Amino acid sequence: MRTVEPAALTATDAHALVAGSIALHDATDLDALATAMRGWIADLIPYDAIDVVGALGPRAPLRTTAALDHRLAIRTAGGGRALVGLVLGRHLAPFSARDEALAALLGPQLGAAVDHVRLRAARQEQRAALAELTQRERQVLALVAEGCTNRMIADTLFIEQCTVEKHVEHIRAKLGARSRAEAAARWARATV
Image 1 (cartoon, helix red, strand yellow):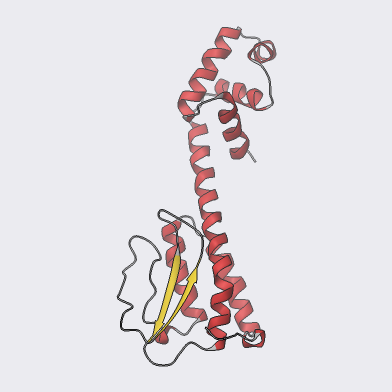
Image 2 (cartoon, rainbow, N blue to C red; image 1 turned 45 degrees about the vertical axis):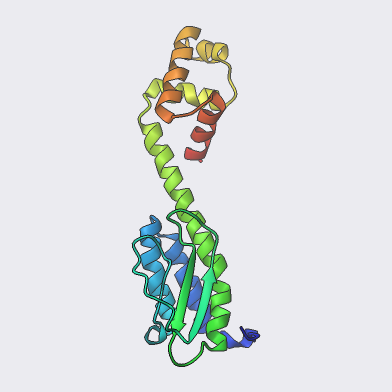
């Protein structure tokens, strides 16, 4: 890969990067992110020159890259169903300095978008799990998250300590939490 001059990027490129980043961060799940990615790359690097956009996700059609004369890879962190990389290929003209400069900027954008989608999905799952709790269980969990003991919770809510213990047991079971601390952490993350 040749050295890329910073001047290869234009104001239009910067505008496209910002607009594309916003669209990626607004994706609701990894499938939506993969769809947004295809459009974004086509806008940034001329679509008619792209032969392959691969490794976007498990459902993305993968074509062989063996016949391509020029390849440009954009990589980002991720695993499982996550977007782990992007391979662009051209049969004829090599990638320009502008294309290479854009590719260098895309990796962090993709990684941040993947992280954002994952965090949003985790928060939605936590909120859905918390919605399964009764009103009293939510009150107990809020007090657990504040660091209250079962005795303190019982005194605050004017109920027996053994009732608080049962509520905590039910809360942990509904949330799939191994401990009070884990349940409290889920409450804190979901109510931020």
